[in-house]
Length: 391
Image (tube, rainbow, N blue to C red; front, top):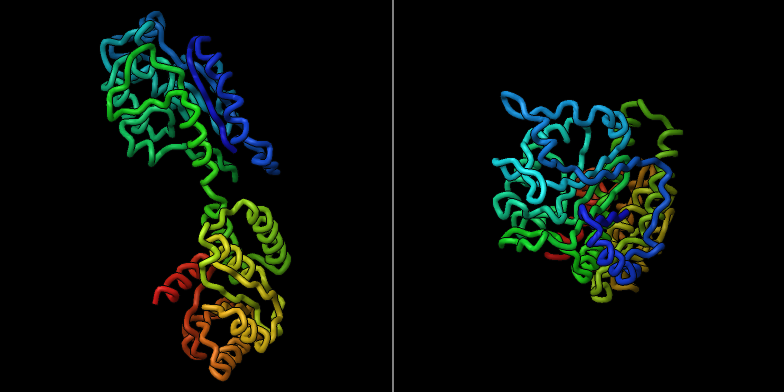
């Protein structure tokens, strides 16, 4: 999901907002939409401002008190999973001023945070009301409260590192983009950056948002989740129904993600790998994940499926000139078929390196049967393949 926000406290930017819709329509196509089963509540608020009368009303003998400012809306803000607000003021320090060049007391930001706003966008026509120092001080104060934000940056390095802003909540991954039509005629001072509306830059940012690839979900969530299922099963906290249900869920997730994974352009020159679950073993969830990961890294993968005789595996490897044979086994009763493959490779003069993995497999077993490598999961398998091919 990609959210693009163009913000201003006036109507002057409306025409410019409208003018970019046609340009961006190809980038934000209907085919990019998703239909998740879980729910994510989003709240968008604009603008968080402080005119002079509001500043004066909040003043106390010791500072500024905004504790009652959001009293009547705090409950509504709290209902949102992500409460996203446009910060239409700088926090540029004293003297505190309202329109036309805003600089609000620091206590205003604390009240915003305490009210429940957990994401801020800062690119708007008042971003530079206090110039370079105001922009930088605003960012520093937001960072001090650990509030994710998008729109203005101290330098290019910070923008490259933090933009597009990736928000993850309830299993959703959202890329948040923020731009402004201008900054009231005040030029940005390098190396500071304000995200101005520029269709070429916006299209590029959208493509970068799309490039936050689903394999991050596989690495960070699916692998971690299925590994945790295995741990719980070993601890007898999960039983066979939970194990099967988790495996089926994993497969559905993989099937959904596979079309989205980008292939490397040089895939035609990449080595060929033959992957199979050994004869007598019908378990293939782990093997399927390995195949998916290796394909995503551009390798030419021949997936021979499950319950595959060793003669077929070695014959295919020789015929396809495979650099590596990958074998999977879940059961102790079938793991010895891996040794049969290693032995047949020697007998047939097959030059493919053999790597193995599976729930019952260990590094010591790999050493025992003469395999060239062992990996405990799909992510480690990719690294193992890269290491073996480099030697």
